[in-house]
Length: 126
Image (cartoon, rainbow, N blue to C red; front, side, top):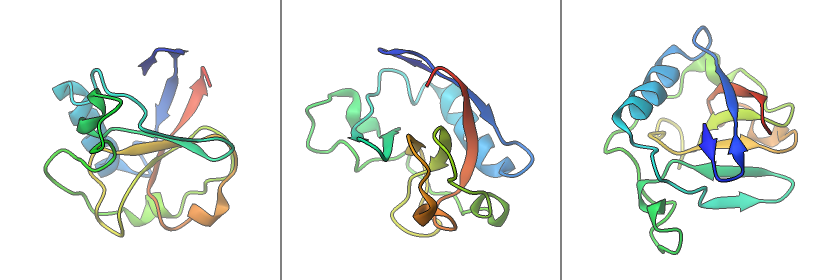
């Protein structure tokens, strides 16, 4: 992942979250994430991106968009823990509403366990 602050290398969990990873990779190949900003940054919690409305960082719609479809939460991905910085998860507005928005934890966030599908982790650059 290329950012204005440097590159972030992500290991995707193909075995635990195959459908979520496939959705993410599809969006990457479509160029969905190109030029987007992290529209939600909360110190000592997480950074969130993936909203198509965030191309304009001043947009009031940033954080409200998606790819035009939703994916179900995979039980095996929900079983993975938000137990360290660098966990990659799907953002959602409730069960089975993930699409393109994702977040990276900056600290352990155990209260998110079972509510957000974990599908990767930062291996370098965070």
